[in-house]
Image (tube, rainbow over all chains, first blue to last red; front, top):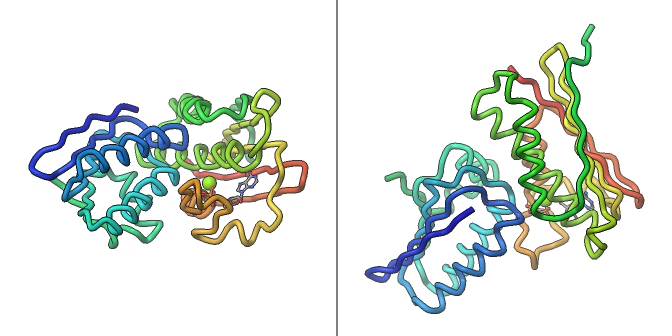
Length: 103
Length: 144
Ligand SMILES: Nc1ncnc2c1ncn2[C@@H]1O[C@H](COP(=O)(O)OP(=O)(O)OP(=O)(O)O)[C@@H](O)[C@H]1O
Ligand SMILES: [Mg+2]
């Protein structure tokens, strides 16, 4: 797992490559939450185009960030989740609660 | 009559870095069985869920050095894969409750409570047996 982040025009973009599982979520969560505090963005964008694998731990990460962003009135967008990730979001019934963009 | 075609077994310490080991071990086992990418994704997901539960819940608060997770894969002539994940942890007091979508005993850990419902949906059958001596999850997946 590797993350790459950028902040521009009020948007905080985090690209997560590799696997999102229980082992990797803790580090990803800390990085994103710290970035939200320092950057104070209008919008958090999680770029999942290079996320190869995600299980329910990733679901917890996504729903946790959605909650946090909603509370802080920050927009939250998921970009390019691959079919297996979409399958998990759909099964959990949260696909419709999320702003998912395929670019 | 169905016959056993292949079998592999591994055991590892209840450390989170072994979650990816379990997925890679499983992917290696099914590598030559002609599974589609989406089937492979399902298989990796259910293994990851079961192993993570053993590590996170089964052995919660215990020493990882003395906590083992067991993963067994069996492939049969009728093209079924049987995945068994066993821990010797604390057990699940109420299986029916544990199976409910969004049920979790670890909400602070930002768990979604969707692991068992995902295992159920992504496999063709799921059997859970549990006692205060540990938990065993057995999943069947047709590789067609
Ligand atoms: N191997 C196990 N040993 C002990 N308890 C378990 C085990 N597996 C599951 N449980 C119990 O069942 C509950 C539900 O499990 P499930 O995998 O559905 O959700 P979760 O692990 O809490 O969250 P998520 O999988 O979404 O991260 C757990 O919170 C835990 O209390
Ligand atoms: Mg779980």
